[in-house]
Structure formats: structure tokens, C-alpha cells
Amino acid sequence: MRKSKSQKAALCGVLAALSVVLLLAGSALQVGTYAAPMLAAFLLIPVQVEYGPRYALLLYLATAVLALLLVPETELALFYALAVGHYPVLRCALRAVRPAVVRWVLTFLAFNAAVVLLYALLAALLGPVVWRELAGGGLPMLLALLGMGNAAFFLYDRALGVLTRYYRLALRPRLRRFL
Image 1 (cartoon, rainbow, N blue to C red):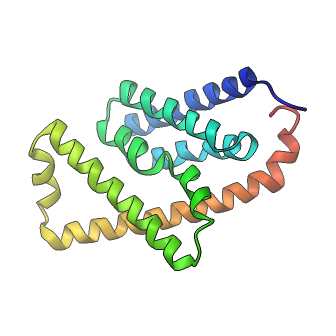
Image 2 (image 1 turned 135 degrees about the vertical axis):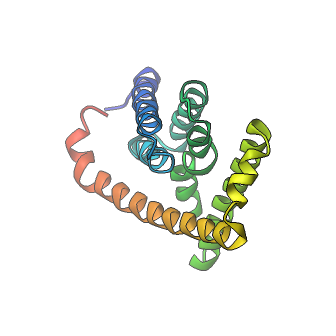
Image 3 (image 1 turned 45 degrees about the vertical axis):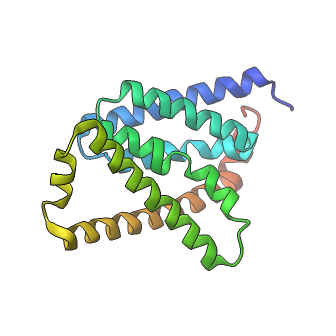
């Protein structure tokens, strides 16, 4: 059955609200600065699979704007808006890039550029205290932190692939009449 634009927008609205709730929970728990945005980005999977990248980007933009307005932890909201929120859509576009090495280089280049932009924006918004906090452990600690961030992003990419397959094979047939 073909869905109307209003039905698609309604699903995007519900998932945007749920994403913001996840981001708010991550902010309230003070341990979800990086995990909550990744979990919220997983909610783009059904929209990406069912309605395509256009509606998935609509969901991402709605969630990013609401997060920047409502989530009290600026770092968490910016991490969603700049680093991981758009990645499910970008990942589908990057799957066409061959060879795989070039795809992975582009993937990590996009992530690292987003992280650098994120902390540059945080420094502009919050002042030099951000740079002092990041550089407090010295360059080796900063490089280790960036390395761990890249490892977490790799695991996020793998989880995104597994959850997309799980949605397509197990959840989609069960939810077909609702979506």
C-alpha cells in the first residue's frame, strides 16, 4: 500500500520526538554524550529503508534542530548534528564507492572532519576552556582520545549495518502494514 506524504511526515515526526527523548535521556544521565546520539541515529533506519534518503534527511534535520534547541548539553547535541546524525544516509551513499579502502578513507575523513568542526564550534561558543580541557593530558592523550573515537565510530558503522539488515529481514515484514 502506498503511503501519503502526511503519513510519512507523521512517522518522521514521531521518530524525531523519540530521538530527542533519547538525546535528553543521554544528557540527563551524564554518560550518554557519545552513545545517545548514536542510538538516536539508529532511528533513521526505518525511514531510510521505507521512504528513502530524502525523508531520512528530513528526520535528521528535524531531530538536529530540536536537539540544538532543547538538549541542555551542547556537546551531545552538536555531536548528533555534526558527527553521527546524518551518517546512516551518508553510509548508503558511500556504499557505492569502490574500492573498499577508498570508501573507508572517505568515511573516516568525514567523521574526523566533523569532530574537528564540533570542537571548533564548542571552543567558539564556550571559549578557550574547551581547548584547555582537551589539551590537559597533552598531545598523546589527545591522539589516544581521537583513536578511541575512531574505534567507536567503526563499531557504530558495523552496528548500523547489522541493524539495517535486521530491520530489512526481521522487522520490516512484521511492520509492513504500519509503515
